[in-house]
Image 1 (cartoon, helix red, strand yellow):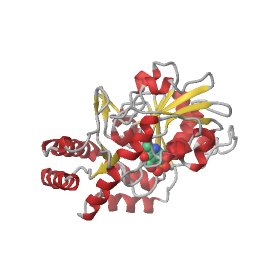
Image 2 (cartoon, rainbow, N blue to C red; image 1 turned 90 degrees about the horizontal axis):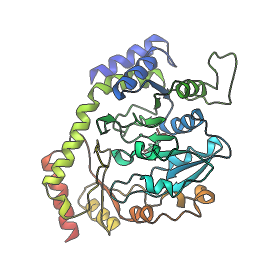
Image 3 (spheres, rainbow, N blue to C red; image 1 turned 45 degrees about the horizontal axis):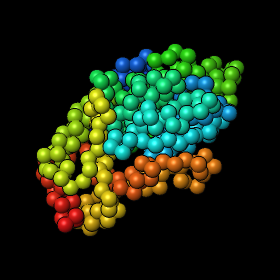
Length: 346
Ligand SMILES: Cc1ncc(COP(=O)(O)O)c(C=O)c1O
C-alpha cells in the first residue's frame, strides 16, 4: 500500500511523534468505528488492560475475575493494579466465559470481571454485567467482530484492544487502545497513560508512560477503512471450511448467541490435537495449539491459580488447535486443509 509509505514519511517530516494530531484523529476514528464515545491510545494491549482496570477503580485488595483460557497477558495485567486475579472457566464451544462460570468465581471482594473475546468470538458482556459487576472486555482478538449488531468492544464499562502486527487490525509495532462510553473512565485513562497528569505540571497518580505513537496511529488510520472487508474475508474463510466438510472431522467453534465473529484464529477441537498438529506440519500446514498450559497453571500465577478447578479450561488446553485463517483464505485453500486433516485422522 503506497499510502502507508506516504503517511509514514509525512509523520517523520512533521516532527510530532508522541500524542500529536495522528493519535487524536485515530482515537476519534476508532471510537466512531466502534460506536463508543471515547478511545484512548496506549502503548499495547497489555497496558490497556492495567490502565483500564485502574481507571475503573480497581486497586489493592480487590479481586478481578478472569478466564484462564486466554493469552497470558489478560491475567498478567491484573496484579500491577494491586488486585488479585481469580480464575474462572469458559464454555467448551465458544471459548468465552458465561454468566455461570463467572458467578462461580465471584466473592464480596470482586471489583470487576475481565471477559475475553477469544479468537474473535464475542463474550456475553451484557449477560455478565447483569450479575451486577463492572465488566472490562479484552477485545484484543476481536476487531471486526459484532454481536447483536454492535461491535466487539462497544459493551461493558470499557474494552481494550491490541494493535500487535498479527491482530485483525495490526500495526507495524506495538499499540493498543482503551475504549469506553464513560467520561470519567476515559479521563482517568488519559491521565494514567501520561504519568497520572493532565498538564505535565501536577501529578494525580503514579501512572505510566504508555502512549500509542504518532507513526502507529498514522498507519492504523490507513488500515482501518479496510477492516470490515478483511473481516468479511475471515467470515468467508469460515464458510469455505464448512463447505469443505470440516465439521465431519473436528469440532468447530460456535459463535456466542447473536455473534458474527471475525475469527482472528480459527480454533477447532480434537481429542488428539497435538498429534494432528504434527501430522499437518509434516505436509506443510501450519496448525498450532496456542494455550496448551492454561494461565492459572503458569508458574507466576500459581499463588492465584492453585485453588482453581477449571475442567473445561484443562480440556480445551489439551484439545484445541488453530488451523489456518486469514481474510484471503479461499475455497481451494480450505479444501486442501480439510483434505490434510482427513488424511491425518485416517
Ligand atoms: C486476548 C489478548 N489479550 C491481551 C493481549 C495483549 O496485547 P499486546 O500484545 O498488545 O500487549 C493479547 C495479544 O497479544 C491478546 O491476544
